[in-house]
Length: 378
Image (cartoon, rainbow, N blue to C red; front, top):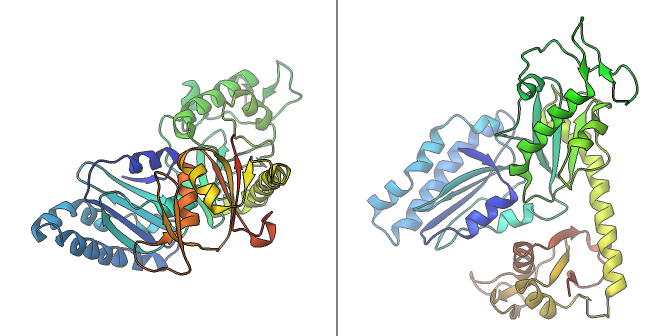
């Protein structure tokens, strides 16, 4: 089953059992006819995976091992693609994720999954959520700077009637006054009013259903609903990332592109405010031992969980090797071999694993000339 990638899914990928582990990333297309080429390219990547597996296993075994992916190739899901696809397969686990970000086209067969492209997606200023609520529908969208995609929800009521066990869909949300205990929302005839208490029950049912999906999330959440629903939903909400400003109006018939267009101006403001706060904290703590822009100090702090926030300059690379146990760095002027990686990415991965916030900033917004700046927990 193709899923939406969640923060907690990363833990499953990182703790999977022994290899071989096949990781496939494919940039995909949202619109026809562009998406027609995606299954063809995916078939080619499966062929590459088979060749890599065959170097260690008999060809027949490689074919059997990859059979679940060949079934995926045949399914009619490509027309619902977002910007990227991440596919993971081992002897004990498999997962497929639609991603609202472009990813490199790559196949990796190793003893562990290749997760680096996912870490970029988990950066604190790269993801947001929108909850669209109306009388007839509940929808959740996950977005990035590149667009948004609908999330498949389980355990969340589909509409007002299902939440309350009332198959009376004639009721409508039309505010009849202020927010006193007796506020009602008129429908189309006698006995068709929706009271605030009923809306609160509806919204609490939605909130309960979302807790499993949101339990490890820290991305900002915007509520998209008609104006009078916002204060009632906030009363029901338990997710700490619900933003005070939401999207007002009916989004019942909106598509993901329209949701992203409405949400992104608000989300960019949220991200900029968060970045400004962390930049100010860095400047306050620089020189105190609680902040640093020195890679050789930040790397061991990242692998031991001392980093609270990491600011990274967009598009900058430092080649070398990171010892992920000790944090020791070996730096090179250029990539000297396939084992070399971008140690800035590596440090960001280790910090994210241990609960840090990681932000990518334009070079001009960095508080230091170094490509990284860290604020420490202690």
